[in-house]
Image (cartoon, rainbow, N blue to C red; front, top):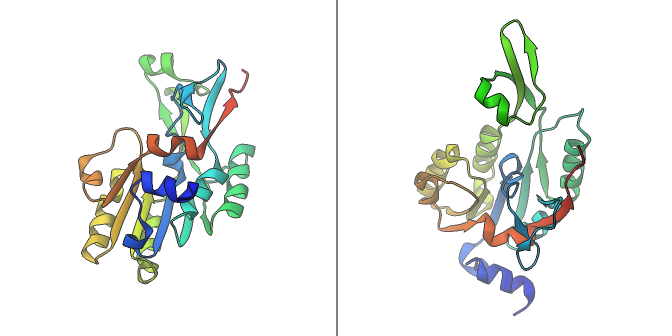
Length: 217
């Protein structure tokens, strides 16, 4: 058994049982899976001081392609943010399809308690202090694409922890599709119970992340 086959076997993914798999990656959700992890690397060692884990786009694409006929990546674009532009550019090289649209910035007024723990820039107007929260959900885009492409796959694979996708999974299950769910952190039973295969993000952490230095303030 080669290394790639071993990876899939340990995850419970047996390609011969799944038919054609199409993967849909809700990266706005996946991107934060390991933000607070204190361990990482091949042996899940304690991270060096001043470092953190990030999801590596190339590694994520490579893992997905091990079992997917097509891998599709969805993420919002902030054209004023170099990191956002870099992610979209890189995803276009690593996935079969990249879906994107501009991020919307929503004004959110904060309480005194919230201000103490808030790391984003605090603004103020006559109504009070506020922050801007990015919003760019792809529930609709992923759901529409999943239906449009339904005749081409036997198994629908979704990378997300968003319970809003439960309705889509019900729709696909009624049409005899198998479901693979990758998720991390708290996930509702409603979503998890619909998957034929449920894989926690911690099970693939060493395959899809890398360690970087934290930005200096």
